[in-house]
Length: 386
Image (cartoon, rainbow, N blue to C red):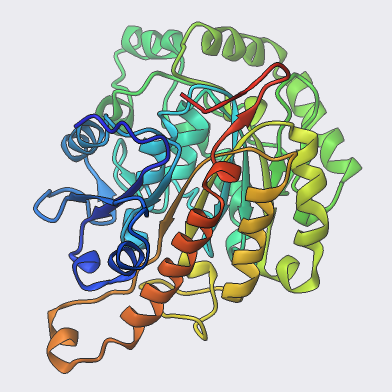
């Protein structure tokens, strides 16, 4: 289906949750001019719950092929947060991915070659060459603490072609995961001794900036520079190989990663640091919201949750949408409650109603600022993202 709307509202229904929510129906009833949502039914599609296999990924891409990245997309519960990757694939210019989530979603997948709701950000960092930055807002301190270790595993997923040939000549078999993934190879081990901090890399050969939540560390910068110097030949071959692969990038050299924990939110550090950070990046943003970033006082999702209030989340999103210096390419929302048949029978729908209300407020925010939210400014003229 080809969507001719510039900023459509799309509901991707995997768990039947949207059949019982009313936020999009209420919006239509209250305003006849409101944009009619596009409801895509994935309830019978297998291979999607928490993990997304290749067949499911191909089908999802096929069904959303006619829809643009700009607009507002509802993705069901947090088990389907990986859908963000498919929307970001539609972006044809460099951008920063802004993620509100209580989890970092950077973990190495348990099943090689199969993306999950806990690994999708690393897939974007590796394979979306337009993604130049990732801004994580809301994870716990414990979650933020795993970022560096997970970044160091990115290169272990695949290896360089000459290394594969060397194994073949020696009569060795490549590792099982390397055979099964079918991914384009990338060197292993270059960053093993990188600083034990949450790294935010520049897009050049310079030492990386440190993640905003951890502050600057001169020692970490020196450690990284020393590691690159000790692996000059290997590092050069990696960069040259990546240049020859249009759909692959070195995430530690091409993607800046920043993280603001829930403690940074409570202290006000996130509010004071995020605007200048985005101003420095000078790139449009795509926003992905998992409602598990919100406190359980607001609603209950199917994952452990953070500390944000709904008012704080709406205020920050409104800032992004209304700031003349920040251009939003699109936005998606997940984090619906675990709502199954027995809860409907018992009529225990409090979590559903709370989640429905938050969705309604997010939709209202979108409808109040559709033009401010999803367009870019050119020095010569205004135009909508194609």
